[in-house]
Length: 93
Image 1 (cartoon, one colour):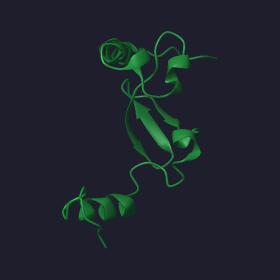
Image 2 (cartoon, helix red, strand yellow):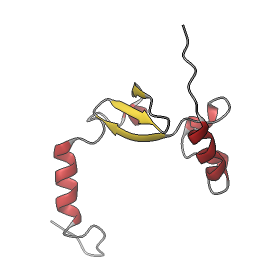
Image 3 (cartoon, helix red, strand yellow):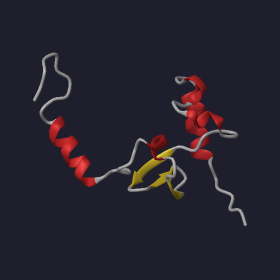
Image 4 (cartoon, one colour):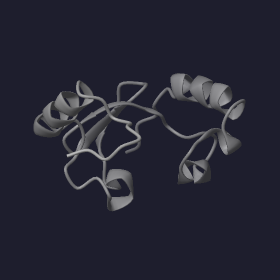
């Protein structure tokens, strides 16, 4: 049994993206029929799209995202570093 999902928010975002990104996306999602599905958020191994459908992210950013999405420890470490600055001409510790 297949469930039909309303993808109107993803379709609208795709139309907007077509104006500023080649093919409307920055990844191989252009290979999807009709238009790509856009993700609103992710947590751990799951992502939720603009239509509210949550699914397992089997690709994990093409296997480079082994820690999953929104890992609290990583968020803390990155946020702490951001308060010190992120783009210096000189070397950093």
